[in-house]
Image (tube, rainbow, N blue to C red; front, top):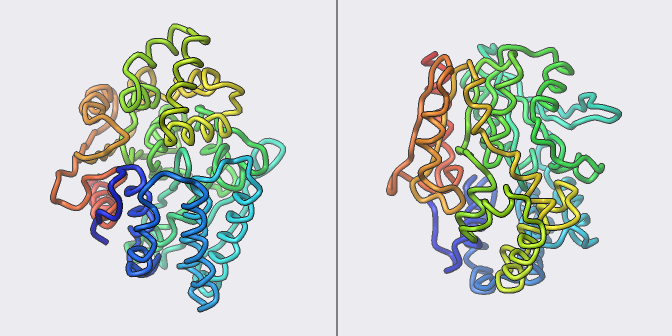
Length: 370
């Protein structure tokens, strides 16, 4: 579904379009326009109330996939410590699995450490390859289902999983680990897979490349989208001095700077609070110090597989120069293909929200060209 301008604030508008991006299967556009006038300012409680209203309506009408989408949105900007957030998540899960009860999708758990990681498996009638898919900073695996379920018809099994710091594993207490080869290896071990195409979405663009650098069973990796340096991207958006201060371990200065930004910018407050939650950082500095490890600067030359790098010209999270920097750094990859989606194509926003089919068509074309 085409990208819309629902509200003036860029970050809020992006999240609304994120809910819209699967088209009529994922939501009703008229309902989004109905609540949009009440979503103009950043307010986590107001955001929750409006989306929860739609979720309850959709549930009452038996539209469980729509209800799942709305429950997911209702929890998004709530603080992680709020009980309502967990309730929204469980409602999202309940509605999603009611919606797909008749679909050919299998939910499994794969061993990981002393626990396990959840995964969804979608099988092709005659598979010619396997795509392993995961998200990044703030996603749930079920969010990717409506796009991924189109892949078996193209001849590909799909495994969607959640790793530490995401979805159910996060609620189980697993904090995110930049060494993404660990959960990827666990999924490949648990399902007996090799020669897979690994696709990482959003911050997953770093995670997938990191895993490929250390996991030879990954045949090819997709950064969907590019994340050259997560901390540098955060600093680019909110304060140019931040990257240098974190790298220099200026803890007091970083904490003071971030606290000032949090007081003046509710979006920064949410990002930092969520970042502290998923990393286990007790202070903004601890979060950002751990976040500084999420960079492909050092590991890119270790990648020897085929790589596809996607980017959007109007991505409001990722600086455009990350695209060329990432392509140049893949000096030992078997092959490198880059695709920058331009304004007007429909895929120019972060993770091609507004036209996911455009991105997935690029991914399938790349796989079949190898």
